[in-house]
Image (cartoon, rainbow, N blue to C red; front, side, top):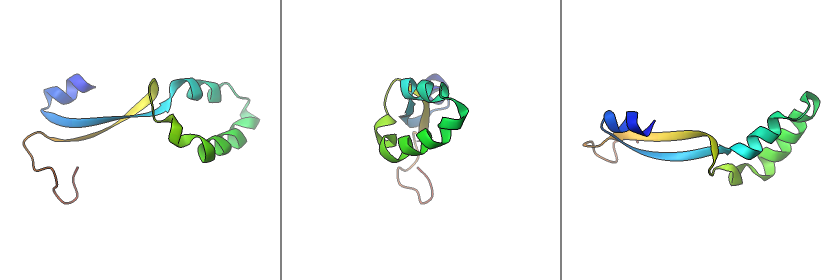
Length: 74
């Protein structure tokens, strides 16, 4: 992904989301437990999960030559 964004001439910030170990454990739960455990997890642990190794990442991008603080833009 970074190679593509670099090729497009964009500045970007990468934010990891959903630590892989926790994500995999949640997917191994029985279906009837997922909703209850997921709610508990999101209330108590979600903020700790935005770290590597991540299941996914969120990218915030902007043109390298553009102003940093345009209204409505990154």
